[in-house]
Every structure is written in C-alpha cells, then in structure tokens.
Length: 359
Ligand code: NAD
Image (cartoon, rainbow, N blue to C red; front, side, top):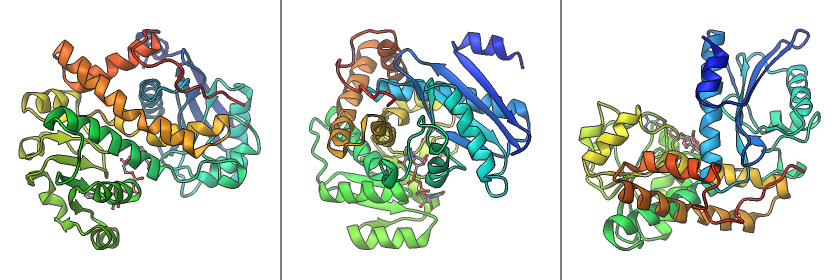
C-alpha cells in the first residue's frame, strides 16, 4: 500500500504511528482534515489481522468523521485512531497511558473519544495523561450516555423526511419499523411513541425486545421478516450494511432512516433506493446527536445547548433533501456535497453553529 499516495488522493493531513514496547502499544492516529477545527473521532481497539487492514480502517473512518462533524455543524475536523490489539486481553493501564501521552504530544490537533473496543473507563484513564479526550465520566465533566441524544437527532431527521414525503412533519399514525431496540432504538421508540407513531420492533435480544414492546405497546416481528413489512419508515438501529442485495427489493417503506452506521452495504444501494422511490436519509447526517453531545464537553458540557444543536439535524436533513432535488441526485450524494461545501467555506450551513473549542 502506497500510504502517502493514498493520503494525497483523499487529502489526508497526517498519520501518526505510535509504538511503545514496554506497554505493547501499537496505534495509528489519522487526522484527515482540520479546516473546521481540531480533528475529533473515537479510538477503536481491534485485533487487526494485518497492518494494512488497520491503516485502511483508520483512514476510512477518519475521513468519515470529517464529513460527519461538518454536517453536524461542529467547528471540528475529522480524525480517528486505532489501537491494534484485542480489547478483551491487552487493554492495560500502561498501554492506555502511553496512548494518552501520544495524544498530548499532538497538542490538540486530534481529540479522541470512545469507539468499538474502548469505553468510558478507558477515556477516564487517558484523561489522566491528556485533556484532548471526550466521553469521560460525568464526574470528570463528561456528557454521559449519548444514546438519548442520538435518538433525539434521529427523531428530528425523521420529521424532516416525513414532511418532504407526506407534506406534514406530524408522526402520529405513521407506521415505523425499528430494527434493534438497544441503547438508541429503545430511546427512539420512546420518542416515537410519544409522537403518536405506530411501532413494529425487532431485536435478537429477547429481553430488550420484551421491555420495549411492553413499555411502548409495539408489535413484535421476527428479525428476518423485518424488511418486508409494509410501513412508512424503516429505521435501522442495529447493524451496518442492512441495505444490501438480499434486502433491498424486499423493502415496503417510503423512508429508510435510523441510527445504525454504514447502513448501505455499498454506495450503489443508495442509488437503487433512489430509483425505487425510497428516500434514504444518510446515516452520518441523522445519527450525529451522539457526536454533538460528546463534542459539547469541549466547551463545558451543557445539556440545553446540546438539545438545541441536535434539533438542527432537522434543518440539515431538509437542506440535504433540497440539494438532492435541485441537483437530481440521491440524498447520500447530496449529504457529501453539503459537508464539502461547509468545509470549503460555502455558507450553506448557518454561521455561528458549533463553536466547540479545545479547552
Ligand atoms: P446497541 O448494541 O445498544 O443496540 C443494538 C441492538 O441491535 C441490540 O439490542 C442488538 O441485540 C440488536 N441487534 C443486533 N443484531 C440484530 C439483528 N440482526 N436484528 C435485530 N436486532 C439486532 O447499540 P446502540 O448504541 O443502540 O447503537 C445502534 C446503532 O447505532 C449502531 O450501528 C451504532 O453504531 C449506531 N450509533 C449509535 C450511537 C449511540 O449514541 N449509541 C451514535 C451513532 C451511531
């Protein structure tokens, strides 16, 4: 892999390779773009089978964060880090502290948070070595569980989508199928039930399923049947790549929008949804409530400010759908254009939003 050529092709700013023999730390930090501010993105710990795989992942994910943070209206760029190793075995204090010292040396160009394989406890430990970390525990100024805010953002995004498709943002009587009622799915069901929506839910975890069904009076469907249910909205809140060759022609909905990351197995599935007359709201636009919540720690966490910013997801989705209409392109492409326009300084996103600073 010709790393510098690859970096140049997609405008990556910096790659930092970290090694600490004593603790066994092997990590890569990728800073994709800091035009809008310091790069923010989580640290993933994963037992990558090869260095190549780790490089690929960190590069791909850091670029994704540039787009996500830009669309969220944050004054933050995109970055990501991977620690090569099995979190179940090799996550010692020495390793996390050594990693924290690398972050400190970057002097705020990259700010980390938790991701797959890392948790709030790890962020607390990293915080001992550097202030360039968010997602720490509330006792240390942290923002707590992001899931309710992610769900709130999805609700606002759904309202904008429903307005476009049905002419009114009212969700009462709308039939929403929610795939996965874990942290985000549960809170989304709570909000949707409050808005008067009709819910069908599924999960492979029976306990989570029964709890949601009992609390919000939902219909339960088996996981494998979820795609073919006739509904207004299909809300994937479990896994990635659920819109794929096997599922796409089974969908009987008007809108696909949920919290899950990387919902489309491949970009071409976004084109196919568009051709089939199904509106797909890009995951990274609608599930930004979590990053908005965690980023707020940088300015001294304030829940009311977070809720206000999360409500902005409605406007973002509206703008994406407008660009999609004007340019006659699928929304997933329109979202990229909107993010790129913000980064390039076009005033398509209202000025004055975001404003998070390292401090
Ligand atoms: P979670 O693990 O708490 O919930 C996921 C749920 O999906 C679990 O209950 C699980 O049993 C269920 N599930 C797994 N496989 C399934 C299947 N085949 N069919 C049906 N259900 C299945 O995770 P979460 O924190 O709620 O996140 C959900 C999704 O949203 C993930 O893709 C995550 O990356 C994304 N996301 C979460 C946040 C957040 O704030 N938590 C923010 C942005 C994006």
